[in-house]
Length: 107
Image (cartoon, rainbow, N blue to C red; front, side, top):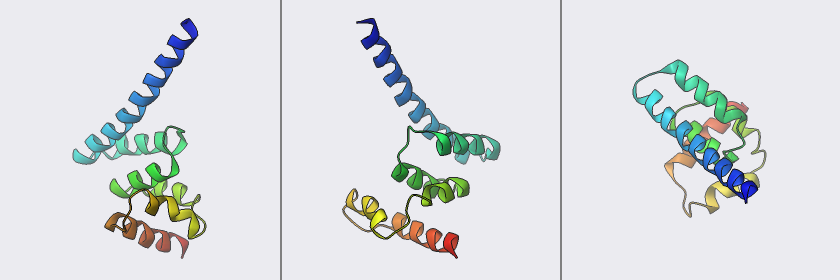
């Protein structure tokens, strides 16, 4: 029972850490806090809380260049981008911007 409680507390911690990172990014972006934004970006880069898709979307939304570059490493072929399209059901401006950034990074 105590082990289940610890597991639940850890899961709650992970969920709140992820939400906090996203909220801190919003605030840092809103109030032009570049250093804070950089620290949160580093946290996300090395965090296993975010999957590759989430990292790529956050990199696009908050213009996080290092996160974008680190995230793009996992997308080497056209098929590897499939998860971006399949989960949204349509082709959006976000993914178009990501493709442009991918092209610029590759060349």
